[in-house]
Image (cartoon, rainbow, N blue to C red; front, side, top):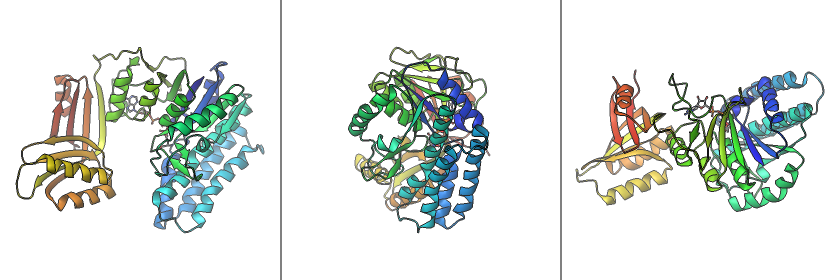
Length: 421
Ligand SMILES: Nc1ncnc2c1ncn2[C@@H]1O[C@H](COP(=O)(O)OP(=O)(O)O)[C@@H](O)[C@H]1O
Ligand SMILES: N[C@@H](CC(=O)OP(=O)(O)O)C(=O)O
């Protein structure tokens, strides 16, 4: 069997859904499960609704705008007929109305998951109905009954054993006769609450399903020709990799290449499942293949830019050397505040750490470290990672810019730089 994943960009409007149906119709007879994200920027809109609800803003009017944009897609796809999907979508959105009518639950992350997950529940209703409408026999599947997670809201941790057992038992038989349509990004707890797997997590969902169902391949359909050596929104003259090895894809996504979610590659590598990254606007093009036999063309350097970085340098208040005792305390503080370190550097009397800036976490982290160390900090900064770098490229990328930290290993260069004014 195969798994296809369609992200928000591929289903941002009615044309996108029609194109998805065309791609599915070209897929042939092999059993197919498709994993779909929320349409366009729906997840951002749902985040804004959640924040407004908790903060006392006008969440209902934001919700109305989102409902209207989905109604427009339905009208474009099904006309003004009384197709049952109109009701299905309305009934799914009503779940948010019910939440908004109550006093907010104390746990923000819990509310977030119950509200934000609706984006995927709605998009898959629409996609499934449209596939059926065009004569493709399909069935809507609730991912929350298959992707079992713990109750870490917004970052659900997958119970692989349960997920594998349940998917194999119930989904494999269904796949024999129908295309299955399910949601990316969401899972369910043992108490039947909804969890999400982290922003942009639909690629990961697709990898989980591919692994648990023993898929032959996973195809992720994107608005780019494949995996490029840099984000085309930031660089011109990008080059496409025709192939990437699993380790290379793993490194690129780890350093922040947002084209694929970082958790996607490992389950595929473990199960030796081929990953194709292909353009949804030209499905016949080869895209990029990540597989066991794929070789990376290391003559093409990959540039990965991570924005919104913070750099904190700490020195002991008694001016003593930074020792292993200090380091273990510092790492513990980062772990306690759930701040992931992107880069670090030690000197005799100071230790510098670069990490993703998050206002709330930053304030707490700085308060905790500041009670023990003298701190200097800087944000927002950029972290530039270059795989298979060449000196000339580093010079080109840093020309006229202030470099605060630089680290070179054999294959990877990392630079923390100030954002130009
Ligand atoms: N190395 C890269 N190769 C290709 N695209 C990249 C790369 N790095 C960042 N991107 C960006 O990733 C985008 C596609 O990912 P994303 O927006 O998450 O799609 P979707 O939400 O549809 O899954 C592209 O439009 C591109 O701007
Ligand atoms: N809709 C979710 C999950 C996701 O992965 O979306 P996309 O496939 O559009 O990146 C998000 O925006 O975070």
